[in-house]
Amino acid sequence: EFDGYQLLQLTDLHITRLFNAAWTAAMVERAMSLKADLIVVTGDVIDGSLAHRRQDVAPLRGLAAPDGVWAITGNHEYFFHQAIWTAHLASLGLQPLLNSHTVIQRGTAKLVIAGLPDASAPGRNAVGPDLGRALEQAPENAPVILLDHQPRN
Picture 1 (cartoon, rainbow, N blue to C red):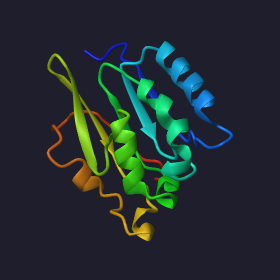
Picture 2 (tube, rainbow, N blue to C red):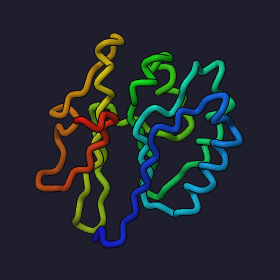
Picture 3 (cartoon, one colour):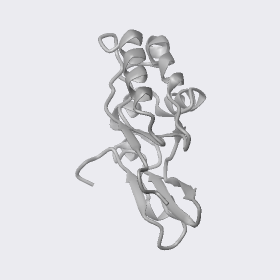
Picture 4 (tube, helix red, strand yellow):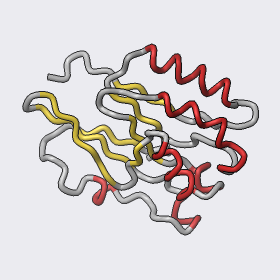
């Protein structure tokens, strides 16, 4: 049922003064031209505070896919008030998967998309990655795509 399914991963965007609103808008336009079934954003979306980067991230609202746009944190979100950023990015349509999962279904087939917060979270007084919690109540025997910002994990 998932033959031909297309997932687009965006990671380490590091939206800043250099990679600003114009850059973000161009990236979103290119991403949307790929017509992916699902978009995942795997951390380090920003470098800066919400006050300084609000306009630069605004074009992210244009990301959309039939099975959603899902996001996890990278270490850089924790440098700039992660909870504030997670809430703001969710308001733009990037739904957080932090120690949680969602299930995509095609007919009787299921695909689990699970996400973990960045490993640096506990050092910033935030909840760290917990794979057991992320997969709690996930359908048995369904393939899992795990979103984790740290390649070493």
